[in-house]
Length: 543
Image (cartoon, rainbow, N blue to C red; front, top):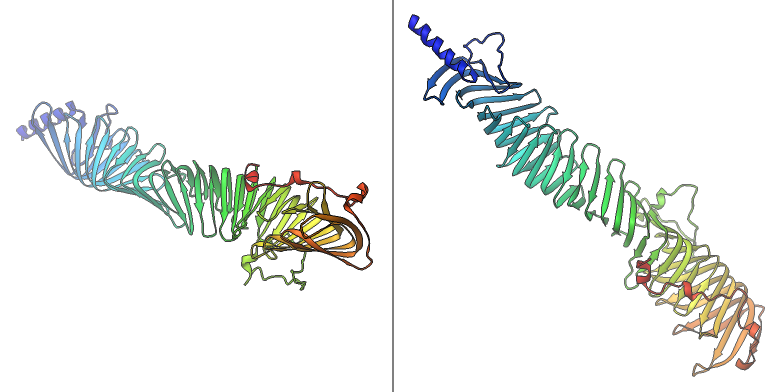
């Protein structure tokens, strides 16, 4: 018994000399560490000591092993401690509690006590204080920095969000994980695919640093820079990101979303395409509301209404579009009869005719260009229900060599072509023959009908007046007629007037070409405004 006591005393003395303090099978009530690097044995059912040389002195522990270093606790089924190098190899049900902030689990760990680094294998699981769980086959964990890395695939589960990748680095101090290679993030609302991603398990913010695809229902977002706040449903993207949905697509230098509110903002060379209605918007800034299916474009916006062969280009200070059913009850769309004079029947915008539930409007410095018709005005309103452009405040419309002005004008389209124009109050049509000669018709209202994009027939009513130049078969001028009547009809061929018809109370005079009084050449209010006319679509694109 004396010999055993002497050996045990020497053994304990040798362990105390190293920076490892062993414990008996039943540990003392408290164990005091001499320094932050000192590794303590709090508990073990059995232990054995073996000294190989002056450096390698091994303490084998088994059965409910508990170790401590500073504020870090380690549990294991068994462990071997090299007292000389302060290296631990532990086996079984391993649990490392790092200051109650991070908990790591595994079946095997090699722990470097001096460096405070752990290398874990087999069923590795890391759990942070917010409930985020990282699982991986192998994990390198630096307790000094609370940084963990894996290189053989890993998965992080944070509430309803799941992230997987081949490589990953977890920063416990900031609760951030950097995922690399084949990164996939999924939750009930989003799926994200990328090569590199930063995710914060506390804030639930995903930051994108590489080409990324985000799938949200039928919507796809492509970006390489930005972030998504999965908790708040807010996102900001940069570096020319794009969004593709079933009914629209949008590309911009910068964009931001609030999915809970259903709103978005897009800045810098924005290209918005409404595929359902055949509309494209180019602008430097666009605001969108998905819940109301509306958008507002400012900062040099250009709208393109796609037609088969004659698309319409529109610019203004401000462009807006929305659902007709979302318009305030106090605001009404003027009821217009169709081109054959039948009473207008409102479509079922919430039912079978829901595809017509769309309007477009523009304010200030409106300019419109198509190959067949050009126009300017201060504001316009276009409803899909009747395919009519309503032009307000000093509108001017040009078609080939003809100009039409009035207080208000409605330009109808049919089969995506100009079909019929109505000019209300002070209607005035001018047809330029040459710089000195202009056919003119004015009236309280003027209607014009188009054929293949050209004026085919027009009628002026209400104090109608005209100036008309007669031409012979060789297109030489033979005289000028100035007349007035209740109504005047003018017929066109090859874009030129060929016949004038006067209806009721005709008064007029015809002058030979050399005897036309100068004051009879133009009707009152004549103003040829070719300088305001958009010449090409490219002119509008550079507005």
